[in-house]
Amino acid sequence: MPLTDSLRDDILASVPSLRAFAISLSGNGDRADDLVQETLLRALANIDSFQPGSNLPAWLFTILRNLFRSDYRKRRREVEDADGSYAKTLKTQPAQSAHLEFEEFRAALDKLPQDQREALILVGASGFSYEDAAAICGCAVG
Image (cartoon, rainbow, N blue to C red):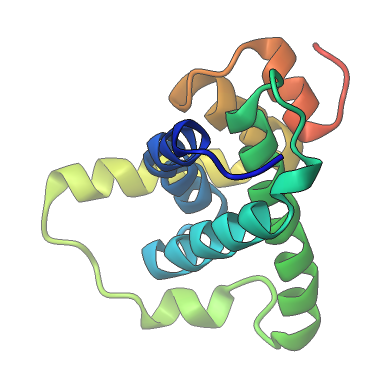
């Protein structure tokens, strides 16, 4: 399938949601931007494999999720501070209460298993249906 103006516009419209999902997975804005960029590059390189009439955002989110997981496995092998205990000692405490509340939310979200965290972000924050979220995550609904 060639890249039409309409398809390009639909891809661009998905970027903010892709970035939000990438931030929820990586916890880092710079890393999220890299994930979104790589997702878009992969999507454009493989645009012929996209089935017209299917769910474009779900296809893009699946690419992003797979990239994150591949990168996570790679980084997990490389990092000596796997549990983040040393990195936590390097953080400075935020001065704003809203940031603290977000950090508490983020900490609670991080306690969820990866598949539950992904499902929550896809349905709750990105607005996907349960069926679409299940398709993105590669699992059954429920």
